[in-house]
Amino acid sequence: MDCKSALIEANGDIEKAKAILHEKGLASVAKKSSRATEEGIVASYIHAGGRIGSIVEVNCETDFVARTDDFKNLAHDLAMQVAAMSPQFVYLDDDSDSGEGDNEDLCLVEQNFIKDQSIKVKDVVSEVAARVGENIRIKRFSRFSIGE
Image (cartoon, rainbow, N blue to C red; front, side):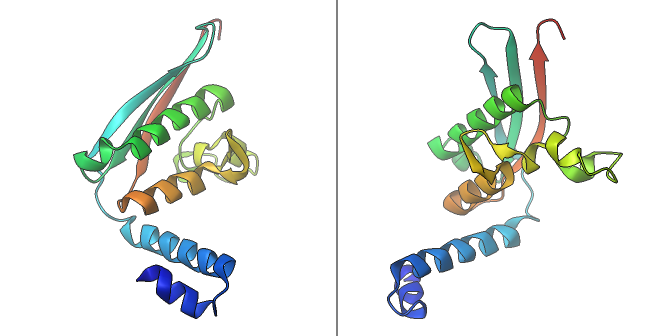
């Protein structure tokens, strides 16, 4: 039904209908952002050579979603992002020096996604949240590197 109403709203323009559906999905994610996220998984990534590794905890609302491939792939991609980009904190409000402009480079959700530089990590998380229909929150992460 959503597709049909989006096509009607877009006067038959498929690309415009896709954009409308995308906006509705993001609005749905925003509504769910206050829901508790008590389930989830811990994912890890070890870079080739074994000198860099990371671990990330990603939470969702139900264990059902935590077992889906979409959610598992997101958690793995986030662990890879942490290993590659060395963020210092998850969200901008986690940083005590929030007045400095360079903090976006150190904030995980504000970084460009390593698999697609045209979007930010927060957008990837929102897309998966829209697909699975639940609130998703990155709880914490840690990055390990030999010699650092």
